[in-house]
Image 1 (spheres, rainbow over the protein chains, first blue to last red):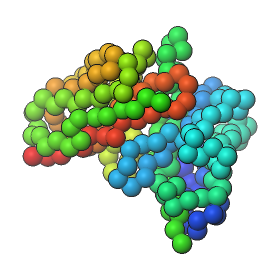
Image 2 (spheres, rainbow over the protein chains, first blue to last red):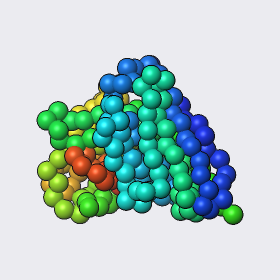
Image 3 (cartoon, rainbow over the protein chains, first blue to last red):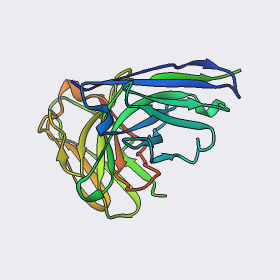
Image 4 (spheres, rainbow over the protein chains, first blue to last red):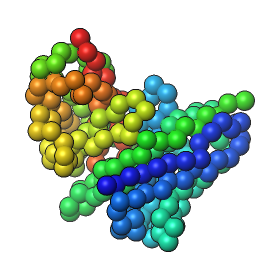
Length: 123
Length: 108
């Protein structure tokens, strides 16, 4: 069955960096777009970034643009999120998710998610 | 950017109740919405995509409907395992991809 397992979260000081990883299994990884979505305590889900099959197409939320970098390695079956210049407001559980597209290009949704990894930014 | 609001933000219900959750968009959206179920410490679960298509394996007591700016998730007969938080998502073609703030369904 499809599984997504995130790792790499932890406590980091403001301005610091962290690298999150997601290890998928149960499907042909290179056939799917992948995404990161976060949820701060008591807040709504917030899409962070997504990456295309080969990594040629990448999009970021404005809140993380220029600070976070999404990447993938299809040979190693992994997708990563590099978090730089972290801020207190980046504190959240970060979920890895598989992205699916509606037929005809009518938008994207997330059909499988991981449990998430907690990132805490605090001095 | 399109903003999504949900109502109610919290509802208390009993097993067997019919539950309806609303998701409203800040402008008419020509595309679709999806609905997710979240339980504490668990991976969010896709329930419905394309506004009304049930994800494989999801019980038929869940249904979705709507168009324009108003979308609805209905649980026809609430079961003990349905107590959770439900969030809608706009199936935007281009970023950003937006979610509603969530509706927590609690036991009465």
